[in-house]
Length: 229
Ligand SMILES: [Zn+2]
Figure 1: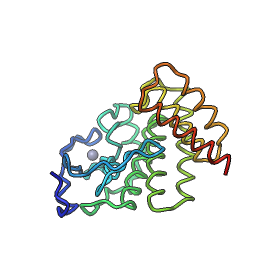
Figure 2: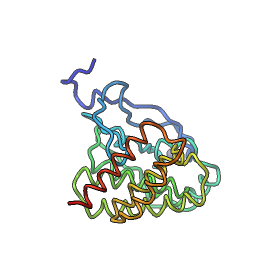
Figure 3: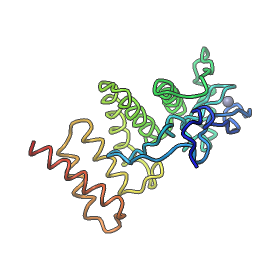
């Protein structure tokens, strides 16, 4: 049972990792099972929870060497990427210390560091897109519309590159969900016509799941309502 009075800090624990870059053990914050409650899935298929947002804790950062990546890719860091990191990391770079509970600004800081490493290790376009979209979501949480738009544009461009360069599943997304997300990003950066076109392609696909079909239908309704307004 969820205890509403439990402090945020008590809902978190330190999970152990081994860093793929420096090979040392370190710990990263993680939400304990059942200690945050699902609220809703938004238009961007981002799951909202209370009182802690899981995606504020998705960046795993080594406190020895400072290497950071999102949990989806941290353990998949390749040998050539480790080499690139060792060769290209800014020599002044020092791992940061954070308080035990992360707010939006801390989460943003950590995703930006993960994005820095995604660049220097020549990470996939989809990895960069995923991080950029997380940054857009979290900037949205603090109503910074300018940065939200900026990172949605990056996410849109990098996912388009990934669509050409990579094979599905891409960052755990099958093609239908991926296309839905591209439509969402097109919409967020003001390209409604493209969003509609992409959604009309997704809605007729035979392998579309019931849950995603509902999301696509809702999205199409939202776009129609906006046209009328
Ligand atoms: Zn390390």
